[in-house]
Image 1: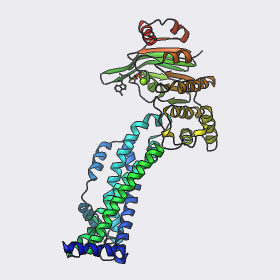
Image 2 (image 1 turned 60 degrees about the vertical axis):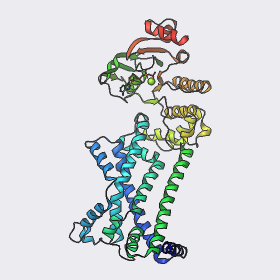
Image 3 (image 1 turned 90 degrees about the vertical axis):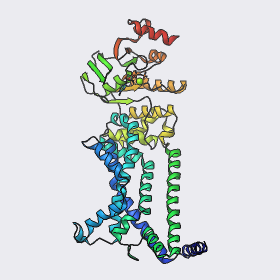
Image 4 (image 1 turned 180 degrees about the vertical axis):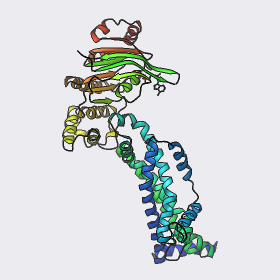
Length: 234
Length: 228
Ligand SMILES: Nc1ncnc2c1ncn2[C@@H]1O[C@H](COP(=O)(O)OP(=O)(O)OP(=O)(O)O)[C@@H](O)[C@H]1O
Ligand SMILES: [Mg+2]
């Protein structure tokens, strides 16, 4: 009990003192996960919209596939990207393994299906409501998909935040493709795992507190944004 | 008057259900109102004619291609301003920038909503949204306008306002094809009545003659029922 409260006090002082090492780790986490989320949205949202309004062979199979890929185990994605980026792998010549770029790639792959599947759900619901009106006005399907993406921007921000929440909180992919190298690829989750196993609780606790606060704050922002948008835009 | 639209043997079958059966019609009147009980197939017929549904049999023939627009029972508004909702339709119609703004402003003026242009469209009242939908249609300068019970959920004042706007469309030369449940409205607006029941056209007659005495017994019963 004493040890824990002592650790908590140390953790609090680390946070309060803006410890350089601590904030370096937080900054890298944010950089990697935000970049991955942006990439996942740019790729995943158009895919999701097209799955909702498009008409093509294999659409249903793809929908099931993307829904299933929402639950991809991070370690499996990490392993896959590791194999692609390792020296002997097809992308080995770029020398990306154990760099933040590799972590961004791996988290993008992890998060894109989540964003695509959530986007498809949002756009499919809107499509039910708008379909006849948009066709009456002469919108092609790609045009309708683009219109619905814009129209659903507030609901879709939730999809983006869900993706970010997943990225910032996962350990598996960043551990495998980043290698948890001190000062280079060490992020919040991998640091927590490592420091805890070493028995160095203050740093782990400080990061844990920051991570939990971030996740809660993100959800609060998403909730407030949706409420505001519903009142403002209906 | 020569017809602007010819339907011949139009069928729509969904599984076991025949929703529209063997509809053969020539439309020529300026304002045609489609009457009939719930589930008669009125909305479905409009959708077939407008091209939102594909018939399982028969043909829809436009002797001359006409610009069409449709106003739905529940207006569908995008999450943007009233003005941009009107602009959106014009963009899809390929109207040039500049001309779009001019036409949208004129259309909102026409439906009496010029002062609401900057408001988010989806938080307007039902009657206001219906007028935005009419403005969106007006701006497209349609040669034929389809209206599916456009006043179904409106209060008397909004109802009058929407009927006035529909009258202005007709006065501007737009052909009107509209469904309604409201016999008073049909009397006020129609040049011609089409009565349908169970997917079939039972009567097509000039409005004055129809309201004096429908030839079809079920149409006569429908009118008596509504007047009670
Ligand atoms: N996609 C569909 N699949 C199966 N049945 C349908 C479909 N669309 C409509 N129907 C049925 O076809 C019939 C006609 O529907 P429609 O909406 O055209 O009637 P309506 O005359 O417009 O009725 P209301 O006055 O209630 O608006 C109804 O019995 C309806 O249940
Ligand atoms: Mg109907």
